[in-house]
Image: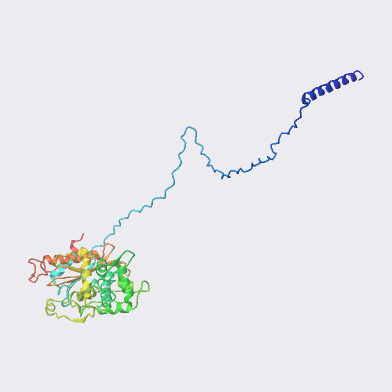
Length: 429
């Protein structure tokens, strides 16, 4: 230990000497001012904002720019292009499906008919035109009310059927007679469409006749319908005839307009329509229909007037113009006509829900000097039957009779013509 003490003292002296030398190196020379060292700022120290110089304006703060992150492009592939703005999907109208309805099975409409009092020329033409369709044809002489032929008598004489749009003839005469419209009055039925009486009858426009019916009211419509023979037997002593019916009140849904445009709740027979059309054709005389049972009764038949119609002076003439338009450019174009034998008529198409049958009506007459005819065609079946189809049947009857010179003053029975065509059932497959 005694030997170590001198060594320790020597080390302490060396250390003091080294500290003095280090102090001399860091001490500035005489006359110089020592700079005070500023300690380094900590990373977490708050920065003092720079002073604003006088008159200087601070730059306006900019809104932070939002950057859409770039999509990573896989290695070796071209960068994706920006997708175009999505377009609204195009609305495509589905193509209309053509529905083919099966026709009703063929029938023999002549089965059970008694033809002893028929005009056989007219009957043959009617049977040929009707073919094997389920329907009836009634032909009448409007000058005296004689029934010239009834094809399918069981159907034509039974209680009535929905008249469909043929009821528009009653509505027209009622509206003209009550002064609600005249022939040239236009009625707006839509934003861009309007009809007068002629075009409304020709095209069978339902809204037009609904408006007329609602303006007339149930009582006035009933008055004219009764005058024209609806709801009662049309014939005088015709065996087996049953009357149609007229509703005691307007339908709960749709009111009078449904009656006057569609025939809702009304039942009408082909004979009633034939009598009504005869009164229009002859200028206002409603005759009882008489169906002779043999040639002797046919020769001795005398007209039996039921009533003269109290209508507007020009009412019948105005309705005739619309009926002519139905054949010329409206719903009855299939009827056709010859230039010297024009046909006037009214179609009707609807469903008789009592029997689940589709119905096609066509009531018509021609304008000729001799042998004027009223022809009513009524068809029952599937959706293949309609008013236009019925008008085609009537047109075929008129054309056949015209070819046989039936409407000429000197018309004679065609030589070699068969006496009676009772049935067409033989020709069906």
